[in-house]
Image (cartoon, rainbow, N blue to C red; front, side):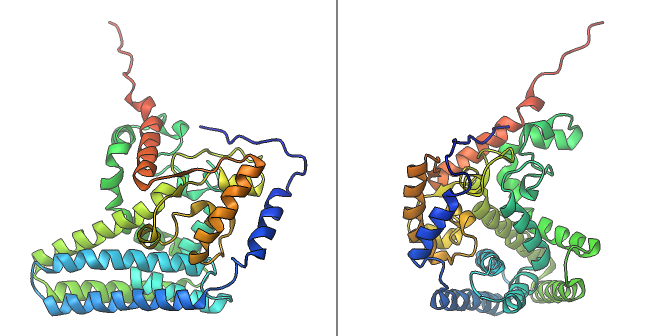
Length: 345
């Protein structure tokens, strides 16, 4: 486990305040209603168009192409729900929850309340071994100590987790649904009845449409392609952000805790659209409520400020970000790949 380097400071706790003033003076925390009106409209049209194409194509193997399009659409819908949860879209809580549940529960089939709770804990303590749910030991292991002692199938997965990373992402959609149901049963969600009802409506409408319109074999193929591609795409939007970055030891101030554990991804407008603005992960973690179109503008301010105060600012290409994450996964699983000592007769 890598400890986060901390540079001695003369005025502890003042670094983020100074950065926050610069960002505020630039007006980058102001709402962008026109942008989100356009984005919500485009994603809404993708949802309507995707399902319209599904019913128009009907019982045909060409619906697998529609499945891929709907997978991209579901991912974009999930990214919209992410922005809504961070209050980037609406100023108040009530409209955020209403539209957020429509996008997540009704549109994607994932509990908005569960995901928001989980994601908030991640933002509060990114890459913290004990407090960040995104690095807790589950199927994949992000801390070497958690890999030791694993046996059977779990040990096999950990030994080869770098190679299995992208194949396992095909199961991400299923994991989101299972985790949502568990959260509803555990009482983690504030409005469990409402969220459960929306999830049920999604499941009934989705499965009924697929199995009524398509033949049984086509329906199964559609589910596999749609949910698999959706999981891979959604997972790939989050994978470059923190994986392989330092794990904090709890002594860092807010600015260092967010910057040192995050990684930005270079790219143009296409990268911005494909990753939903998450390619500006450093700026997003420093200012979670900052509207997506302002993140690119804030990058210059944040990068220059980090250089001024001597805080490393990590930025790389999309391919290199995946390479670093996979390399880190490979290193974490190293103890289980070491040959076991053989007993001597």
